Image (cartoon, rainbow, N blue to C red; front, side, top):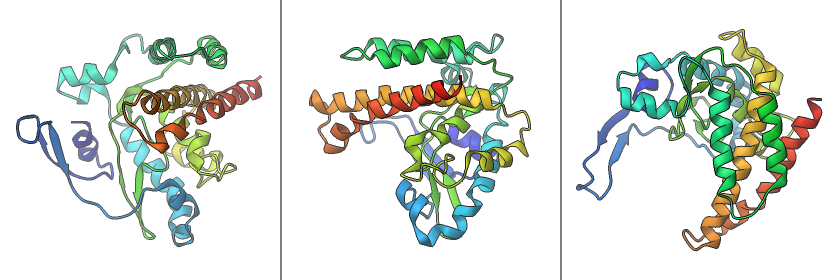
Length: 269
């Protein structure tokens, strides 16, 4: 279990208590974890006056927690089937993380109900600018404002590990900086609570080899992934699979993410 692996490496995350794979008990497999205090709501985290003090400390605290996550390597996971699941199409020897990610999003784009020329242009740029991965490590996969719990006094835990996988550490840093996770604090590019450089400098204390060009690649990729995701979520509502005004409204974010990815590409010239 990924949460247990992270917890055992000192990551501040709720302690896993039980994983039950027998679906006959409640109809599905389930797990139990430690209850922690705090709130995760993104707008609350970046705007609430009562969090002013802890917000200033978040770059330092989150960089430290992220460094512990990124210290975990595939060889430390003894369950080979889970290891392969977390690697996906990534080859450990070739370290083809970017190539594998591009392949996956191209498959997703092909399944969309209508054409998206902007996505095709973004894919062209990603294919032409694939970075090399220096080391394959555990990636949280959804490391952003809204997925950590805070009180006015402290960070109480990193949550939502369902997208965790082995990949490039720059993925997590870039995802934190994706525009949509700033919750209106657009000038504070790192999650709406710090500037990009503030967070970079804190992270470099643990991994000095942080490469800003690699972050750019994964930030463009992150915006593309979320653009695709917003289409998929809106389709759930449109097709009647899961009706909800929130899902319907998320569909409008697609063009915002396409625009942001193309803006990043243009500025990189």
